[in-house]
Length: 389
Image: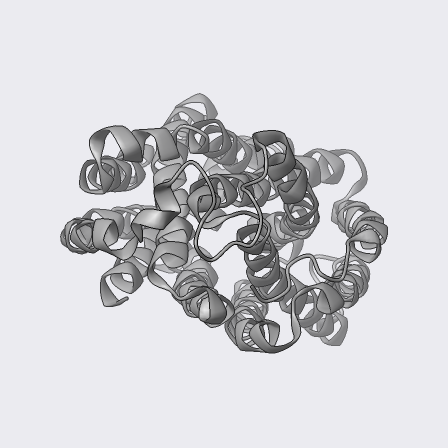
């Protein structure tokens, strides 16, 4: 899957570059924490509203055209963002970028399901997750430092990198029709299934649990990634903390796939949610004083939260794919991505609003409470849910 890897790396590099910097650009223009939170909130609202249309667009106009348009929508508005620090202009650019990001996310995860054998799907999702997470380790961590030291416009140029992924997108599109067995497209049963395809409503019910679990942990992750540069005043501390968060996210998302192929996903979900709760508690305690954060607590917090944030992305996607017949992988991909981006966007908005009213420590406690509320849902989910097909 080298073409998918290149597409993912380049696409998410552009996305990650602006994730912490666009809110800082808005603050530089006079926005408060709530306004800064809207920047990524609007981006991901546009993403969520667009994602449901992607499977239909793929069926009508094909993978190549959809991917090319998506990469242009994600990359070009990065330069436009540099034209003004006005919050309304930044939000308008975020809407367009969100539409492009919707294409990248749904197409990427759908392609994994089509290209990888179901018995090795966890490992395949892990490799895909590695390609997603590497930009979040390097680019997202360095972007605030680069904005302050090399200039915001340098970061906005980096944000156009998704355009360079167009050749990889065209090459990937040529492989996908041949990668989908015809039995996956039949209206009846599949040769790999022992029961008829479930009704559409049953498919949506099966996807609800992983989507809600994912939403809770991405709510926390979105808040940490967006606002850590504002929670801590020292740029070096911010860079190291984001690197630690990203590195743990990358490692856990990559390694948990093979483990889930052997043992199933269910048993790991509740402990990982608990890890997120503990980590966010440490972060909340550490950032009470932005000028003098408790560094040990901050380090432990971002590591524990990053462990949950990375691993649960992989596990919930595996659960979603295993909950539906093969011809429904597009639906599973879209629903999973809606959960991911809704959580990330809500995290940005919720933390921004709460921080404006009560401070970042209270905001971190609040998103930790959301993760805690998802633990009973994980425990009630059937052990067979998300097991190896």
